[in-house]
Image 1 (cartoon, one colour):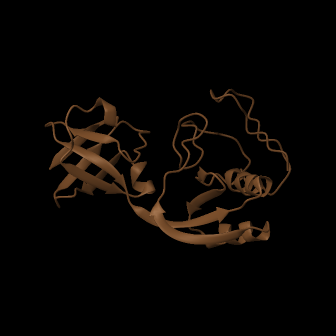
Image 2 (cartoon, rainbow, N blue to C red):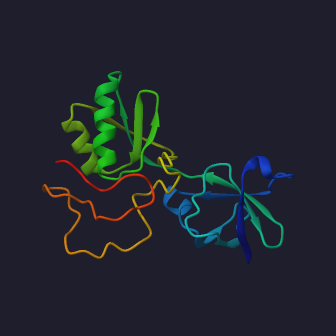
Image 3 (cartoon, rainbow, N blue to C red):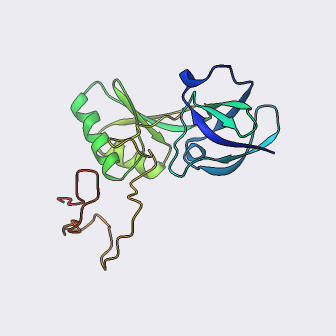
Amino acid sequence: MIHFCQRLEADECQQLPTLQLWLSMDERVRSRQRVTLSDGSEAGLFLPRGTVLKEGDILKAETGELAKVCAKAENLSVVSSSDPLLLARACYHLGNRHVPLQITQGQCCYLHDHVLDEMIKGLGLTVSYRQDKFQPEAGAYGGSAQGHNHGHNHAHAHDHSHGHAHDHSHGHYHGHGHDHSHEH
């Protein structure tokens, strides 16, 4: 089995990859997994923890083989609006729920979820559906597009549900310029 252990940017690669690796968004954030390549052979990903693969990345195996990362088509909910304020409100509410978003001119997309679709419709927007590659924003700090993780333990006695009014500030620095204080 081929073991891929290094991610390269497309412009770092001197030769064209002969293999392709089709991955969903959930698969592109897993650094250790067994995968099937375009030629049908099995391979293993052994990438540094926290690696997020994107369309066009090149993976290099220990033995020198190269594979191009390709995003699989997924079921997406698409919110479109010619009203930038209304679309911004939708993005705000989705982001407040840590939903990965792909944002383009006049629309945003997220992995299909009927509960989120109903919330968006409740804001006065229309939701359509399509199968397409999902490439969400990486986030302001360049981390995973798959939610909010600090990589450390929050050892305290309250939950993080957002249906109440208390301060989420923990009195310690998170290393990325904001605390968890949420006004509700």
